[in-house]
Length: 142
Image 1 (spheres, rainbow, N blue to C red):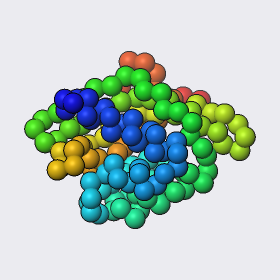
Image 2: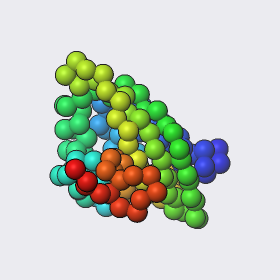
Image 3: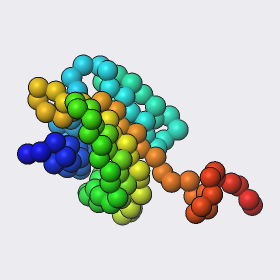
Image 4: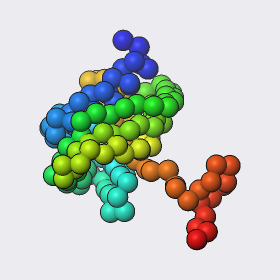
């Protein structure tokens, strides 16, 4: 398996583990040790360290059930033993009996280890709804 395919496989593994609410499998995607970080879409989802990252996933598992990750635009840059994935996706989930589709943008930083490609950091964001196409910054024009 080439590096690009192997990096993409970590995204699929993440999606499968997340949809299964399998925290142990999900955390195994990250490098060993505490030097990992995560930024989520929630204002309070800024964390570093294995315990803090796991607690964000635990909260998400309590609040909703993801059923599918639908990958869209993607770019993969590999430089030696480091890789960065920039990707957009739709997360299909069920929350309080309602089916939702959440558009998300991710950046994932990976490093090559003896066990293959492992995540070091994942950043998720939502596109600014108040930013018009072609504009440099979001505006609030009520």
